[in-house]
Image (cartoon, rainbow, N blue to C red; front, side, top):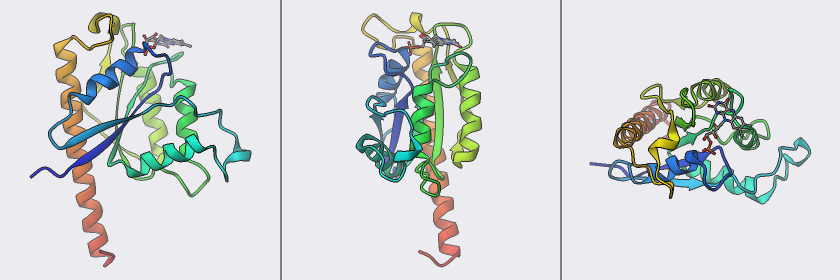
Length: 197
Ligand SMILES: Cc1cc2nc3c(=O)[nH]c(=O)nc-3n(C[C@H](O)[C@H](O)[C@H](O)COP(=O)(O)O)c2cc1C
């Protein structure tokens, strides 16, 4: 039996015609049965300011609620100067604060990315994996989805046309769903042993 599961997808780019945003949209049609992939658009998340941590902007509060409500997270990151785009890092930082109110805490997470070049965002993805350590997220190791030469894999309307890439994303989403279920079962068993359920 399939337990319904919600994944929150976040693309690290605001550009409307972004191939990374297109890859995230494509992923919505590639989820396994019983799984919903929702998208949170980072537009409207302002630059992080510690002075506003205690009373964050409304868009940040919405973001944190959507993260908490999700069973798992999917980041779709472009690579900027061999690293994570500022827009994405900024949003991650907001949702991790104030100290002790980290919305990412304990979330299963997967990542993928698309680049026009040959590296397929590998360097940005490994930087993002380092960030998961302090956030205490649980990353799926494999499959790694690094979409190289991305412009050739989408049509002019931003539809993913490359069947091999579709199959790869499909595998990633199936593995993330299984990982999230495994994680939840472990959490429940730990809570039951501690007498809290
Ligand atoms: C500021 C900036 C830095 C970039 N640095 C890299 C990089 O280090 N490696 C890379 O493969 N592409 C780099 N790119 C190119 C983008 O990743 C590329 O445009 C790709 O298509 C993904 O962006 P998109 O989702 O908007 O299509 C950079 C683009 C910008 C705007």
